[in-house]
Image (cartoon, rainbow, N blue to C red):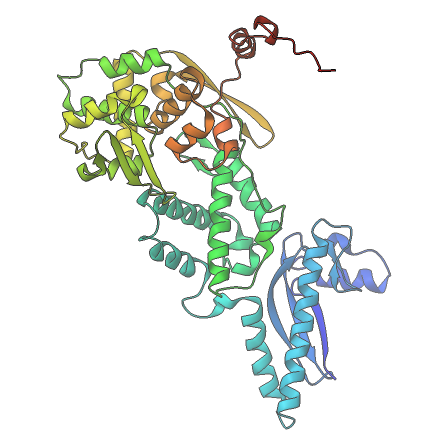
Length: 457
């Protein structure tokens, strides 16, 4: 019968072995000599003292958190249940595998058992030991295979996530050889804290991202883990746990233009600067139609049928109909100006140029944006022209249709293709006087002439 045990590789600090031996002989405490860093857990497999060998697992732990009698993580340490379950499963799988090869090949040699079990543990713990199937190898495949399925902007987000993960593994030695099986709640905590506190933010020049940005990174990581799980690159389901999430703040401050500001920008004379005139027109087109950048960039003349723009939305893959009527009607004039082919410009350059155009058009209203960074509130104050981006156009359309034009929410959702009211809810102004003003425009039933109908005898 085989014996399977777990031991730590580097239990004590280097150079303390003699002190530990003396402390044990004198029956004194020796935990002060424990290695303060995470150390690998080794699996020992054998039958007796002369027939045993060790295998490296992908699990690591600080010695002070290890129960040496039970050979498991101490039960009072956070995450011990999940961690010990992984050890239990590894022990069971290894034992079952040995039993199967012993039954099928009773004459098998000890050296062959060792070879097969070492290989089994590598594959069971880390499918990415195989050449070309490492974590970042698979991530590259994920990006490549999705290039024909998602927008270039989404591919850019995937690449950014990969870059941040590589930077993270370079900073955190625990994850320097990142494997799929390391993506657990401990990894989630470490990566999330890194994004909030340590990563260099190119936008602000400071350390750390806001919670909403962190949530996007976590969401994209979970999408990748799900994709690679479905394709049998790993068998790790830790990312599916409820705690492995970083939800966005649905009710958050967003930047939009008022109707007067949009009119001012739309009518501003940029005839002496073709670059700014074109980016202003594209921004206003987004503000009137409420559509995403990708769909606007892909607009074709044949999509204009009678008085409507009819197309299949790139993100939702749904048929979308935008009538050029009322509030939206100026968008048709913009299309006619360019013979139904809007100027071609990258989203990055457009975001840069629209800030310049908005500043010249004197959109200087001070705006304050409240965000969360970890548990702390962050107040961002800046003039409107510095806070504006091309996506502000879509948000402006939604805000004006809901708050000014008072269009029914389902009809606004038909235009914007939002599928969740929670997403749209953040655009509705929390004006303390809005409820009173709207109620004033309603009529009480007693204002109507009521006809009393007597009950018949």
